[in-house]
Length: 122
Image 1 (spheres, rainbow, N blue to C red):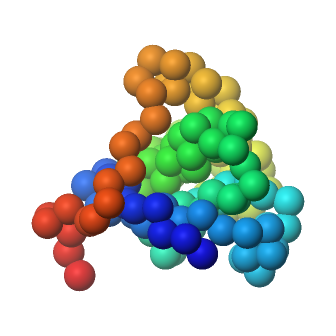
Image 2 (image 1 turned 90 degrees about the vertical axis):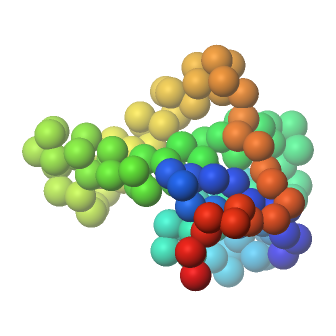
Image 3 (image 1 turned 90 degrees about the horizontal axis):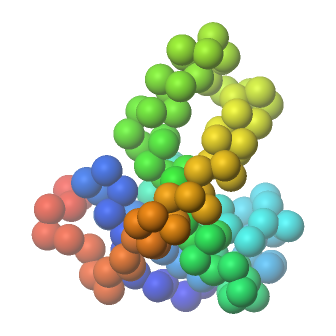
């Protein structure tokens, strides 16, 4: 994996890495071009994905923000949907797929920093 840098997600630095298809497959997502791991605070981008790299990065960034901010939990709870499961995954993915192009156009992709901020804990 190639480390690309860090991005701020709700005040916490998340590592952004580029990985091969084999490495994505090892993560359990063989057909993914991007992946958000909130357990590791890491965003994975497929090295072969160049054409839609900004869209993919922003899409995964949105997953990170929704999960880290608590907004996803609030959205699902208010809709009466259990937080974990196929239905919650489908709602999250739909929400992000709809919003990503609009927010990307309005604000552009978040900036990847070369080193973590000095405010990061641990």
